[in-house]
Image (cartoon, rainbow, N blue to C red; front, side, top):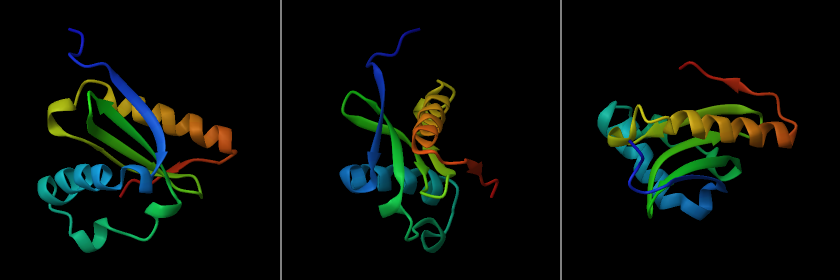
Length: 109
C-alpha cells in the first residue's frame, strides 16, 4: 500500500533541523528505550551529517554520520517502523560517506 505522503530523505546538518532531530531522538532513545539523557546528548552533533526522513512536514526518522565515518543514532518513530524508512536513511548516509571519502564503521552499542 503506498504511503499517504511521499517520503523524502534529506542529508542536512544538525543545526538546520535541530529541534526535529532532538524530538525524534528523545522519543525513541530516551522515552521509549530509557537511555539517560546524559548518554544520549553528546558534543558530536554539530560536526555530523544527518539524514532525515520527512513525510509531509513531519520528520519521522533520523540517522547520523560522524566526520570519522561512524554511522549511528538511527531512530524511526514507532508508526513508521517496518516501512523501509531506516533502510533508506542508512543508504543515504552511506552515499554521503562515500562522496566524502570516509570509511564507514557502525557501532553495535
